[in-house]
Amino acid sequence: MGLPASTEPVRIVRHPDRVVELRLDDPGRGNALDLRTAEALRDTACEVAADPGGAVLLRATGGSFCVGGDLRAFASRGAETGAYVHAVASAAHAAVQALYELPVPLVTAVRGAAAGGGIGLALVGDIVLAARSARFRLAYTAIGLTPDCGASWFLPRLVGPRRAADLILTNRVLTGDDAERWGLVSRSVDDAALDDAALRTAADLAVGATDALRAAKGLLRAGAGDELRRHLAEEARLIAALADSPDAQDRMASFLAARDRPKAGESRAEARESESVS
Picture 1 (cartoon, rainbow, N blue to C red):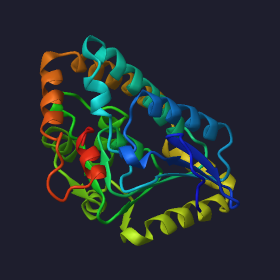
Picture 2 (picture 1 turned 180 degrees about the horizontal axis):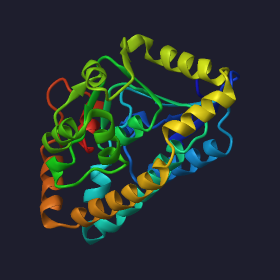
Picture 3 (picture 1 turned 90 degrees about the horizontal axis):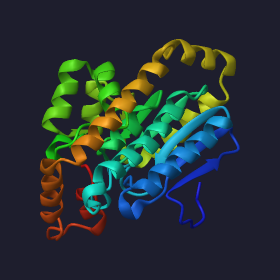
Picture 4 (picture 1 turned 45 degrees about the vertical axis):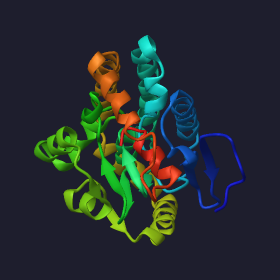
């Protein structure tokens, strides 16, 4: 379904089959999270939560799902870096919490890069579909930061503590096929089939046994919402404190300086991916 031109970084599309779509819509920036985008994500997620239809679909415009925090926005703040990072994380975390607590099924569709905070956004879904060529990478520790957007909460529960530690500490990259084998996503699909498969999955859920689906989801997530909320608050506190440290600021500056000039054959969008927590 096509979308009219918009300057908003996050949009809501209501489909006639009772699917409510939340779309990250800033492809030129790899759907990176600066404060404006994080606040838009929070506000649209709360709007969707107030009227979620029969199922919700979370996906993105462009070649990347979400490349994580916008490091250029972070690194330009000087002494205010920690406060800015905390504001971004807090807004994004409110969105994650709202999406996690949706009473209806949530389907997420991941293509291209899901990095940094994009990992948490991807994993909040009840059913997560990934393009085979999708790339999942935490990448926080490479720039002296810790995970946010619930990544350090979701990962141990999905893949176990050993594999979660591997992903967080070594920043290894998983493709969509790898992510399915690890249990990170529900299934991987051919790249060209991702959008249709995700919308079809959400549409099938939207016309399903609504009461039973809501009750089943409630059982699966019973009691976990408060635990996630506390964990998100701690993630925001830690990443903000580290963002103010000289080590993290030096690492961010070095990370960006090394990527100021795209490599031969690298597109501008691909270069933008390198400017995020990816």
